Length: 231
Image (cartoon, rainbow, N blue to C red; front, side):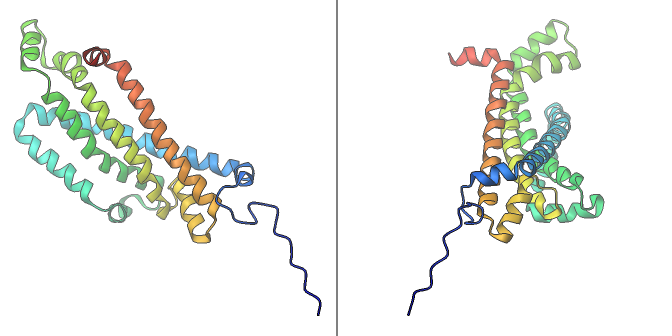
């Protein structure tokens, strides 16, 4: 009885469904680029909107002490809502759209940003404020030229954490079709497409690390006095 010859294994890493596959990168490049662009757009828009909202909230909480409790309490409650539940609650207002994901990320980012900006404003020495007032600084000028610049180190720390968190949470947006690289991860897990899952996951990590390093550098450029104090 003659043995049936075995078929040779496929010479394509895609056909073998390997985790690491250069062929996937070369043949799916445009898909990866589109996913990365969507991931970055949603992250940047959400964090920027959250920052615009967080600064006035932190200023109000600093100016009027009674407002600090409600502001921090509300933003903390928002942060405790699970991401799937958050998107479900926002669904009637925004529908299945990228705006839904952005709105959810804005609400999540507020806690991290408001707390850190408020901490930075509270850390400004009272003597500095009094000296500025003695020089004729009004409330707006005092805030813009003294308090906010001195609060920058704490604010940038919060911005870094909020940005990295947003990069991670964008992937959850895959449930509504707007998850950037999360779309590829979700589809790859459903079909057990190893190269797609690993590649998209690694790209998410790369984006998070790159964003953190970039913001760290920006923070150091904006706060040269902080570098001098640590030298």
